Length: 256
Ligand SMILES: C[S@@+](CC[C@H](N)C(=O)[O-])C[C@H]1O[C@@H](n2cnc3c(N)ncnc32)[C@H](O)[C@@H]1O
Image 1: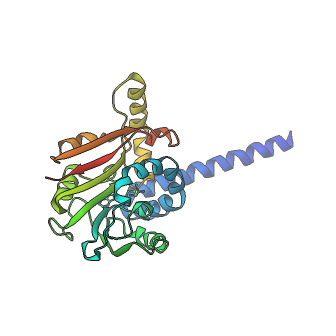
Image 2: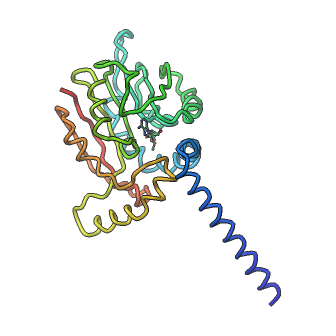
């Protein structure tokens, strides 16, 4: 009886400590954007990347199939890629050798993880990590890049319409935007509508722990309306991913 009493007291205090720590972390994540950025740079790099790679890399391989085969003998014709929101650089392994990358991310805490990861890819030229917003990429000139890559980014930006306008502004005529996003379940059947409702319920927690991300955004409609000349849009549900971020869109959009 004494042992049982002790055990239940220990369990009670352990539970109380875990709940208090969870609530404290949640409060800090909501109260401070700086803390949210710091937390997310660590959490995404150390914890999430391995899970994201499981389901996401098969899609990345399809998305970047043509791009990774890009080749030119003429080094003056290097492909210029602007990657928005690269975080630690999960797309490095899909880039061709003869490209120059401009990385733009609003979370400067990612820079150290980005540089650590980049050192494993000596073939990739990346001059700088620009600390800037996708909605206002004033550091990047009009018609200056061949390719824009943004994977799992529209879920987090504050304004998707402005971001897509900025992508079209910086792309050269005929340039390509490569995208992959986890999205809100499309309302195509009852099961998807229920899953979408669960995404809505979990959204406040998701937002705090995942750096201001929105798991329920149906971003395909923004891309469709953005005015690209040609759009190749695919839907996919990688079963390796947790159901909350399983619905995916990916593809390319070409500027006029
Ligand atoms: C979920 S991570 C995706 C990282 C990486 N692209 C990948 O595929 O694994 C989202 C990234 O977008 C960045 N981000 C979010 N909102 C942004 C904004 N408004 N402007 C620029 N970067 C932004 C975050 O800092 C983070 O690096």
